Length: 55
Image 1: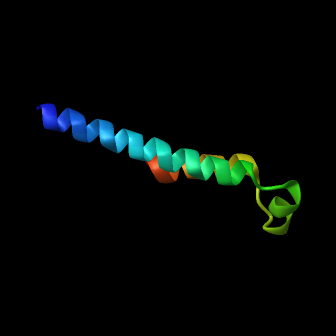
Image 2 (image 1 turned 90 degrees about the horizontal axis):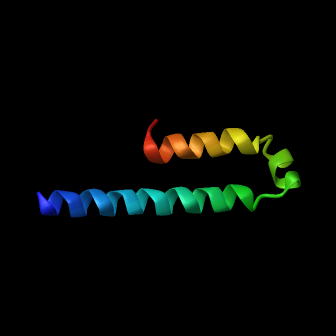
């Protein structure tokens, strides 16, 4: 039981770290970068969340 708790916590930390890295990359993009790839910051953030958390 204790090992399950530890593993779940590690998994959550890893997911949060991955999500934060993706958000940092998206937020670091300039408007020009987004225009070049025809991207929408809000959509990209939404997809990053779904990629990491699957919701």
